[in-house]
Image (cartoon, rainbow, N blue to C red; front, side, top):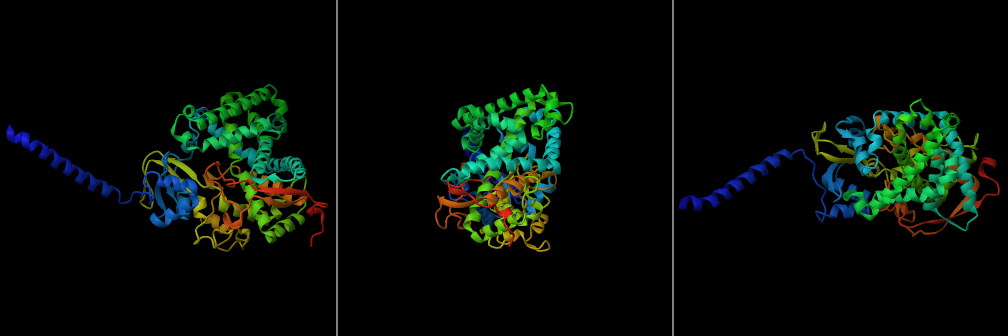
Length: 499
């Protein structure tokens, strides 16, 4: 009895030690192809702090330290990052939805706000069909372009009446009004835009706050803001849907997306509970990247007079046709859009992994969040010469060149709009919005100059202001506002003789 009493603690300790050694060996063996963690100075918070300050720099540095695939603990969520052209292809083309899910990621990121539409039988197929048809058919895109020009013309006239305007916030309002016109129609904009624009912005700011991710929405200030904004947008949209459904024949003649959604077949009433969620998320999706892309491109052009002169020359040679500008003849404007996207747009392509997935390369991607980062990939000096420089000419090279857009797209080195089953359904709309409408209408009719807000040498390619990754959903605004002066031209560029 005495021997047993004395021996039991030592036996237990020995057994525990043996178990730990065994589990350690087993774990080590199982980790041969597992994903390493990012290397940070503060194990628990370092990744979150460094990522929040400058995520692109952080991801590039981690890629150099630990390779193309690594995990980051952001406190509110743990993400496996897959960086580089090879992994862009894996994420966008080689994976299956049931293993690496786009829709599960969208559902989870919205904190339970869009459950109804996701689980409604037949809704996802219907919404994808509606978006594909309504946003991509050439005739409809042309109609949207004409409406964008009209919206822009009215707003630019207001800008010119003021001593100066804040570039980022003014660009945001312009884009929201233009997108609302395409999505909901001009009569909706007249009635609701003034109220809803700040509501949409508050929704987007609250969406990216850390507490929104870790607490129930009612339990944090940002979560409550998100709930209030969501409820009001949904209420307004459902009221609009109710009104239109009483006379669908009238709305069938309209060009906006909502009218198409309600009249595309005879099943509109079956999906009533889905429209509020769908159209609420659509307005944010159409705004979060285009607004800042509009502003950053203008700012870079104003800071590079020779490039602005090229932009002006292209507009001068391509006067508007039936209200909008012929983007097929304007490759420089396309190059500007690509280059701004390369430097500012699409920090994350988020997906959710339902269970551990072994890639063709033998890497085990653990259950949970996985993300590509076009921004990190597109600042790789092996892919892009002088990657930190804003230079649209890199996308004007010959199509056979390794540096051309077609080559970069084909080799998965430029995937801002995705491709295949993961292609962005709004890409054509973006080109119609920026290249055929907002940029040329502004530069054609107005002189622009920066008034204040810049610091020499600061920001990407010394543009004068750093991007703020902490507050904005999607493409960031500047860390401070930049004010510009808008002055009406005596004669618009497209009415002048081409040199």
